[in-house]
Length: 192
Image (cartoon, rainbow, N blue to C red; front, side):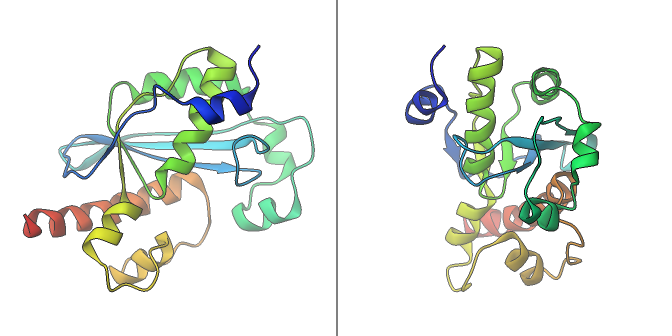
C-alpha cells in the first residue's frame, strides 16, 4: 500500500479550480482532527446539493475514530468523543458521499483543504480519486472584494450581513458557504 504522503504529493487526478457562476453544484465542508491530511483525520463530512440555486438535498455524517480527539477540536466544533463513537466507518461514509456528490462541481470555502483530505482518504480507503472540478469562495472573494482585509468565512458572513455562525459544524458551514457563494455569484455576473 502506498503511504498517504505519496498521495499528498501526487493528487494527479484532482479537479480544476474554476471561477464560475453555477446553478447546479454541491457545497462541501469537513471537520478534521488536524490541519494537514497526512496527520489529521476526517471526523465529519457534510454536503449540500443545489439545483437551480435552490437547496434540494443534504448529506452529513460523523466518522468513527478509535482514539481520543483533542480538546481544541471539541472546543472548535462541538464534536465530542461520544458523538464520534456513534459515528460511521470512514469507508461507508466515503462511498455514500461519492454517490451523493456524483459529477457535480464542488463549491466550498478554502475548499482545497477539504478536497485534499477527501482525495487522500478516497485514494487510501477506496482506491479511487476525487476528480470533480471546484469553485472556491475564498478565491472568489479575493478576486471580487480585494479591499476586504480578511477573507475567512466569518469575514464574508459579516460582510454580507448573514447570521453569525453559532457552531463550527460542517453542515452549518455548507449552508453559510452557499449563501456567500450566491452573493459572490451575483457580484461576478455584474463584473463581467
